[in-house]
Length: 115
Image 1: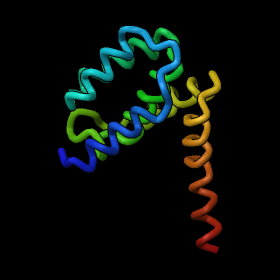
Image 2: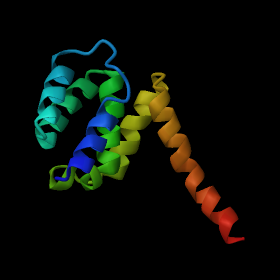
Image 3: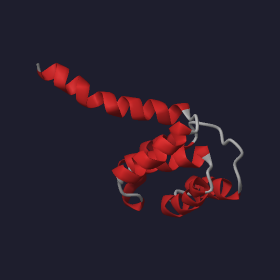
């Protein structure tokens, strides 16, 4: 994995400071620091399923960007990505709200440019 992709991946995962982070979120961060993204995603999923807003946002971003940032360890999974981002947004996560709004605006911007 290139240094650039690793840096961008780390920045995405650190966008929002953990809010009430617990062991799974801390474990995930340690695994990401060692570029073990697939293992970190498992820990993130446990935290997300337990209702952690930050874990939901991070997992959504991981699935949204997948192999583009995490190499062959994480595949792009659009539907799970959007589900986790929507759950985080519903819980007040501004990053998730922003990502979803930009994603929804893209088709509109393309249709305006074509006309």
